[in-house]
Image 1 (cartoon, rainbow, N blue to C red):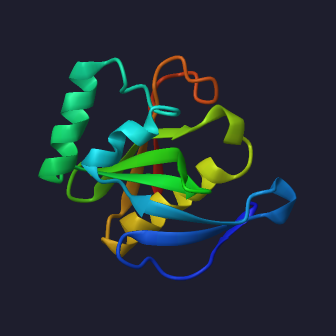
Image 2 (cartoon, rainbow, N blue to C red):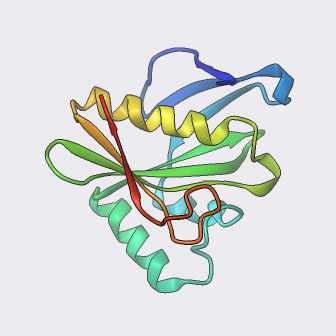
Amino acid sequence: MGWENCGTMEKNRMYVLINAKRRLKMNEIISLEVENLCKCFSFWDFEFNMEKRKRIENDIISGKRRMYVFEYAGKYIAGVCISTHNQDTCCISYLAVEENYQNKGIGTALIKFACDYAKDLNFKKVLLEVDYGNLLFSHGTAYDIEF
């Protein structure tokens, strides 16, 4: 897959090693604080959609959503949202990688991180939500990953 877990998750941080052939080395997946949401506009479309941005901010503050970002060279270049769908299922959404960093295993690392997070919280399934028009998942549906 091009990455491996370099230790356990500690204080909402997970260290990820990206394959050296892909030119990225040690990086961090960290919990996103609401005041840093503006650092994510290179890959999330919240900048000009104030209704969506306010909803995300409120969900982060209330704990309804847990947002994580992939940090490289002091810059947030990718992110993912993890939320509870129901008692047995957590939901992955808002998976995005800045265009210049795509196809380097970062999206895969974020999905692996989210699945590990779900397992640690004893969820039995992970639901992956994708938008209509997404090139990879063109049907605009959700996919279940069962443990």
